[in-house]
Image 1: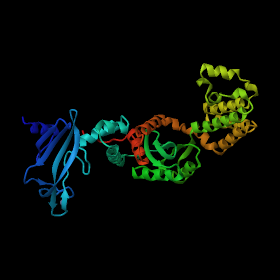
Image 2: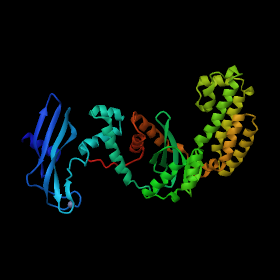
Image 3: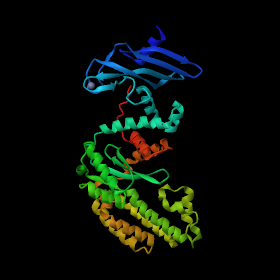
Image 4: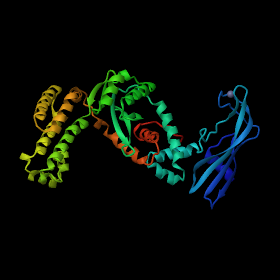
Length: 404
Ligand SMILES: [Zn+2]
């Protein structure tokens, strides 16, 4: 068997395509495979499908292929342009690559598999290609796969923002809670992001009016966006965000008090944690403090009591409990705690909605960790568009339909 025949079999080429020669350069670690078509071959028109179009001329193209052992391999072919009676002069497609790509389908499949498992920069280093070329491949497959997604059964949506690029930019994520997948990611965190999601949902077979439940933080932008574009959605305020508001109040009380209470120095994290999560040493420190006299300790008790809201057995019990808590918090004479209580009051129904919906952004904790992974994999990602594509790749449960 001649080496060209072996390569032809390995490449799976079928007529009219065949390997015409192969050049191996050991010093350059490079294998060049030349592919050609039989003279007089006829091709189908790539536009209308008309068969038996004669070649008009050819253009030489080269594609990076899977490595040949440790050596880079390239395919080069004269690609015919045909003359179609109806369509004019058109370049025919080749079976080993998609139009416009400098990589073969198999090389792209390898790249995509690597991109879902390791940082882009690492893939670029391993395959010896500039990362911008890899991002282009990623966008192609992610865009194609996203165009195919079916969001027709999306009824419970978690909305959350995440900082991109050291907190200068934000992207907002819309996740289908039941499918545990990111449906939509978009730049910004204003009310318009929700409208963009509603449009995108409709484009994928979903219905904004069919969304029954959303979970959001208390940002006025999300509240407004949901009211305007998801008309039938009941809002649940994410319980982790709600607890955080009260927790932040405790921290502000501590900061104010620490100025004249030396015993509070270095205790910040004691008050931010739950008792069960303290180390033995932290617990000992907490017990040694004159808590009876500390405003911070009072604020801390109010925060723990707020968390206990979520242990209430029913929506009715919770409503009564929250009323009592509100009375206690607003009579605490602790300004930050009173402020937090007023915020709770303004979001009353959405906080209590949890007892019916039982949804929280924590439900998509798995997604959050994938988004964090996307950020680190996309490090140096150059653009928000790249970051979004990486989020879809890792957290979108896409079917990439990679060539095999
Ligand atoms: Zn045609």
